[in-house]
Length: 367
Ligand SMILES: Cc1cc2nc3c(=O)[nH]c(=O)nc-3n(C[C@H](O)[C@H](O)[C@H](O)COP(=O)(O)OP(=O)(O)OC[C@H]3O[C@@H](n4cnc5c(N)ncnc54)[C@H](O)[C@@H]3O)c2cc1C
Image (cartoon, rainbow, N blue to C red; front, top):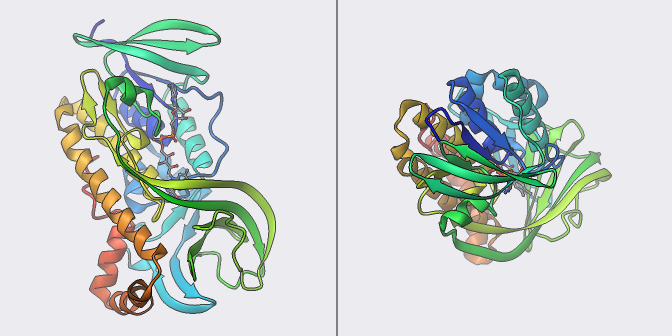
């Protein structure tokens, strides 16, 4: 093992790919593997926020994301068609004053292409089975095409998702809680939708909420705290094609340390939370870009301090927002129907809320 050994990145999701791209850009040697045989075809994370677009400018990826994605410029909250709240995203205090809606499958493809252009190929069909930390590095056992082989690395970056093998083998706990309620989602096309397709629409229901996030003219993602997202009144609109559908439980979990011995954790391997506000992928990509900067500068000891605080803030924000939107009862109803619209009609309050929504309150530790 020597200092010339590459870093081993485990996981070729958006977080592992961002780590690889940001490290390659800084001349750090790396090898990136993924257990799957191709990028995920699922649309999963849609929202790309302003700080992520700014962060990826240096690798030339932002322009490609902007051309492939769809700009969401408004958020409307309504109840049986009566608008309770309308939030123009042009008030986001940033040059990217919108939310870019881009299916995760396309984000991953753009990152993979950029990585290949930088001379790095993601090794698909390669699984990390185990590893040992040694003085000065790590020895990993990788499994590929029915065979195991040993790989020596300077360190291992676990971007291997919420069930992270890297985290589990390091003995790092993933404490938190899971909500009992099940959410449903469906990617659909819509005819006669009464709202413009540059608007994310939140509908208050007796028993919770339903949201529609457009992905383009005439199609988008329906999500609800009903198990079957399609079981929501759409005010005369007709569902056309139904694409990816899924259900999920919301959990709030975070590791206490993002680094131990020869490993670092980033993305869902380190934190999971409600998808409200679409922060998960953005937070993980910022972990990855921060780690790349710190490794290049030799200041990686700061990694946990910088990223744990950001993760903690997002868990708190998404928990409050999710409970606020799905709770019902006289107080919650009054807050959402009267207090929130009144508060958000005040310019500075609205701009502060939009800063939070866009993730601009989080420190840009990747800079
Ligand atoms: C329904 C849904 C909707 C969501 N919506 C949003 C949204 O709008 N905005 C947002 O920001 N986030 C959203 N998220 C969250 C977002 O999808 C995740 O935060 C994001 O995928 C995390 O990326 P990651 O790279 O950390 O992990 P993953 O995307 O899970 O990638 C981990 C990769 O590691 C690989 N892997 C795992 N174990 C191994 C191993 N042992 N060896 C080799 N490879 C391995 C896997 O094959 C996988 O490719 C959503 C999630 C879901 C489920």
